[in-house]
Image (cartoon, rainbow, N blue to C red):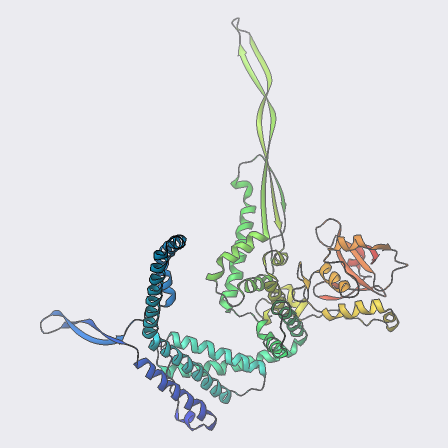
Length: 569
């Protein structure tokens, strides 16, 4: 039976008025736990101790008798599994007997007596098993109550040692105490309980210091956290159907913690390093392809081998739905690598001909030369590497809940901009901000356009998530436009950029007005329309770039990819 650590408090702790009640509760819970432990049945075991006798130079064995707890009896589930085959056979027998009851009154009476005896036997067995388990269950309940009392006391002590008014700091402080307390329980055989309590208090103080720093970081990047909280709130509505405001606010209150990478730096950096090594191995394979293969001709069509580390870590964390270690994600790393990089090797065999000459001498001594064509196989190998783009993978492998978690981590970069400072997302989400724009008041006189802008501006700053189509998962370009217009009077469903273009009536630049859509081609490697935004007037649009933002259509980039304007039906 596992025992909770018995905390030892210093004289200063005992003299602290604010700790009087928590310590009293701990002592009371300890007494009840010890009493419950004492009621567990005991047995005497014999242990052999071997020692060396220097006088005789021989090894002596001594027997020592020790009283230990009896092993907990098997649970009801264990009995059910063990007895399942016999119970199945018995049920089959009863079924056969029941089929004969209607024809024989004696059989029916005997069968009912037999069933009554079996039921009584099961009741006796159940009662006996419950009686055997009673002291063990009582001890477990007592130890759980002691655990709660210990945690309450340690948390109260941490609040006194490291006071903080920041609710996020308090929450992180409590989480650190729970984590350290669990570690103390696991290692209590290797350290005294007094040392465990001391370590827990130190960890709590350290956590409080980190939490204060985290609080400052949160304030400096409050816009990103507001977006993360909004995504979490929408996800909560979608998945849980919450009906209590207090439950909703509890979820939002933990939003900051939920948007932070929970894993250790060594594991996250290790995962990134391993993924980079897999990419390096693929690059080496391609670089030496001609020297390690024996074809006649080679053609290469290779995408660049690259990924963003924040995308990788956010995906792993969302897929594992919380903290993970490097050992636990080996399969995930390989799966993501196989999804991102698609290598194909296509070999075509052609029949070609070479000229050969045959020289021979006839019986008269005359020399002759014959020339003829000889067929042979000519091998042409085409090697193609497609980088599917790791950020496009989540929508194909994640549930809606996991996709929402991924979007949340990407919106804040896991609150760890220091982890991969070279990432391009640092400039997008941490150092940079989305482009804002003030709509001219006269444009908002159009009620339809006003409704579109009201809905669209709710999501400014949301991260780009390939395939995303709702606030709970964030958006891609067409998902964003589809969502906005579907919540502004239309009902077109979820359409891609080309689909949105197909339902619109083409509009010239001279006749375009706020609320029309604007379409682009060639923004990435895909046929047809590749990007869409909402025109807001004055050559400006609002669109899901990375992140959702306003953009100036006069820029050279958008001018080079512009396709046309379109008016919704």
